[in-house]
Image (cartoon, rainbow, N blue to C red; front, side):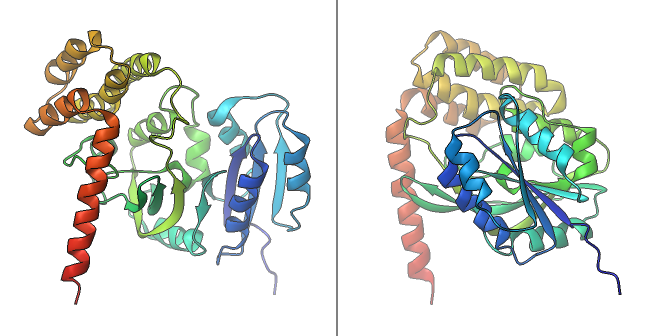
Length: 322
């Protein structure tokens, strides 16, 4: 009897200057219940010697790493990993996240049974934040719900409503070769929307949380130039408008562009963004309320309110449990 050496899944981790974090991510991959896999770590350009030293100590025949000759940024580093992949299915993991042991096995089952020719398989995950741990997304996509509607239209003041997290992406390699990642603002959203234009694609989910994601909101880790951030986001959504509904367009303006402009206290953006989501998009009554909260309730206060309300909700849920 001949045993196939062809892996069922190729896992790609991109990393740079985070040797201790990437080792935890690697361990979570090599501990998967699905054993017939390969793991490729792409070091995005020349790195500290410690990174290579850590990777060289990984003793598993399913593991290998490549060091790119120059820094090409996340999107192209992922594409380089896809070029190295041998399996029909590819999964991505960020170097500061980890997976549950059953993650790949569960996603492979969903992917192979999907009605879509090109399923984009994701999963729920545990978001570790400064205020606690939460299971996101709070809701799964409705049957045949457009990707843009699912990830951009909000019906709640709370975060984590509709999310497709890159660290849970699980897709066919052929799809990634056909539609690669492109470097730029919101490159993960951009890839999802471009893939969503292809006939035969759709979202498929593992309902249980299969990853742990470290969320840095409010820590200062992701705040470079808020003023430039909102302008870049507005430019991106205007270019991407043909790939989504008008309601999804408004949703993106309200809960992704407006917070960055409001955080920068750039009041010149207020009227511009209001017109954008009302006239160009298709605003709902809730969008106006959410837009106003972004501008007139400080971000730290919004986070505190969300934390208190979430705590009350969890307390009430616990009290109702027999």
